[in-house]
Image 1 (tube, rainbow, N blue to C red):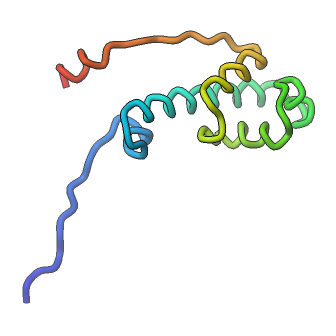
Image 2 (cartoon, rainbow, N blue to C red):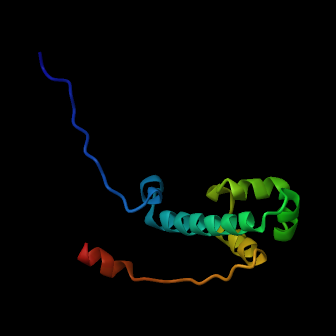
Image 3 (cartoon, rainbow, N blue to C red):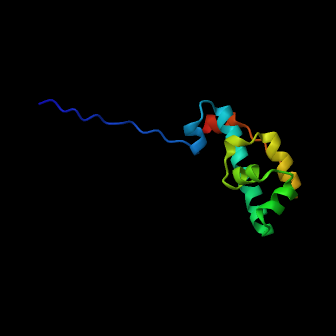
Length: 106
């Protein structure tokens, strides 16, 4: 009887976004949004405010705050997250690196 067992090839990715997204550009966007969401969420939790007061401080509705606290990156554009981070009192710094150097070495 012939063996029906197939071996699966495994792929390794730098991040979950690289595995889930269709393009490197989409993955990069999702990585930045996820990082920003986590930073905002940590700031909101540190306030120790009621959800209503936290939403008001961020100029969000309660449902939008809930999306933010659950880290639903797909629910927020990068532009929206920049506005929310600023309302949370966070300063943003963008770091740009050359991917072509990394790819040549890797």
